[in-house]
Image 1: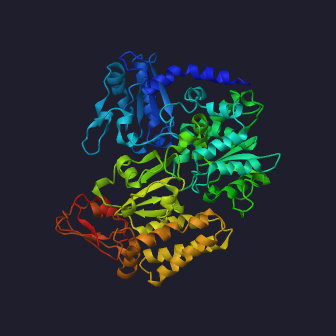
Image 2: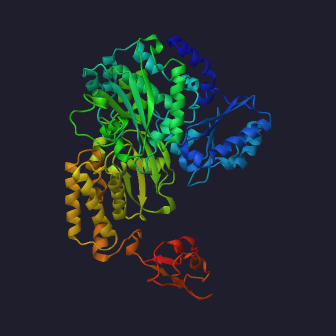
Image 3: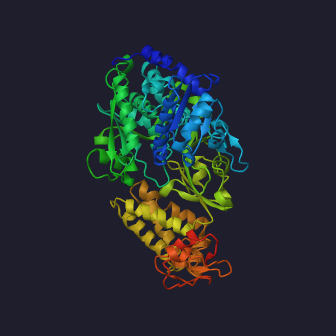
Length: 626
């Protein structure tokens, strides 16, 4: 279908009008009406068994002769990951959670034939246990605002026509046929869109620098090398709506005068790579990539480059070095990539979320996007909400929403009535924001005042059972392993900080170690070559700032209040609670638990390896950490 025109694009959109109407709820639900069963099918859903559910539903639909009025679609939706496998039934918008293959028959008989949702499969309010049938009535979804994630649960990510039905490539058509490159850039600048990869640099300004650079060859790159622990935003966007990224890259290419692009995606994301590959092939077959796109005399094509999983390749110059076929290591700036980037040519690089916003900004204009968010941070932000929180998954909220609202209104609070201690924001490059600062809003500058950063959007909730010294050690171990070793401050400084943190968590720390730790952290932050080293000390500095008392307890009292540092804890069996059932004795790998039948057991501290196996199997809460 080469040589597609704007009119043909509109024609494809119109063929999808009925599908869009069904999934938007504009067609009222009737007993005999067409139903679309949208089964979440991202990586998290697959891991939870969604494909088995999909096959079971397919069998049930065929068994009951429902194929004529039921469409079964696998989406890329992993939004509410804690409840996967999940499915939305349109036009009703009924949301089923934690499905198993055995549930398919009940859905077919009771809902698809009988017209009544299967109540036991619905989401239930965590406090009242009241079933909530409709997806958008669930607090987790009701408090979100979707722009980047607007097509979650609404399209088949491997069907370009469904994406076009939801306005895909309308922004590209407007940018290529109705706007000059400078008008595109001005629209982006007016929108206030800032880079969602962590630094928050104004995207329009970055594009303008590249556009003004003189060169016969320029490049547009998408950074999908998501490597932060607790981050899965980019992967989810690529799996659920790959055409949003392709379209954004086309617009960026037009703005700066580039004709070749690369999506740099880590090889650990096979499903994302598969769906982007399919999307690229479909875009080419529709004439939306390649030569003379939409008869605009503008040509652009792109390909996927698979990274080997090096965290440092999330840094823009290291990523470019990797694409060039060399070891992914950062290089000094200036010159900046907008002047000399990939193969020494002017290059624009944005992360997945940033690019996925672009087409909607072009379609709706800059002031529309600028009307969302705060004065300095416009639009929405996607977060991967995880850790000690009831509702984990991918969320999108307007900039300016407080961290407390995210954790409690969307996340449903902390499980088991535990006390929230901190929220780690920004991954290993971020910081730990304590509970008393949870009213901090999601704004680049507001978050930076706490010692954390927005980062790419990893948000990990921690409760009273988390040791903040151990958390700092965990992130430092990650950064030290991922350091490329090119610059001395990062290579040696992260190693030294890890040694000091390990010493403290093992009960060997001294008070002067805290001053040394802080001095080294500031040195690494101020003198490292790239963003990895410059931000690696953030977890250390933020925990020293807000949780210094925990560090001092580890040193002075040889005590870890959270019971997370094994060298500082001792297990003891409460003889008043122990029933001598023998469960703990059976699982102890070091034979440290002794005792006869009907006699309270004891733990030999010399043999105990502090693995915690006994605690996990004791049903009487008889084993204490002292």
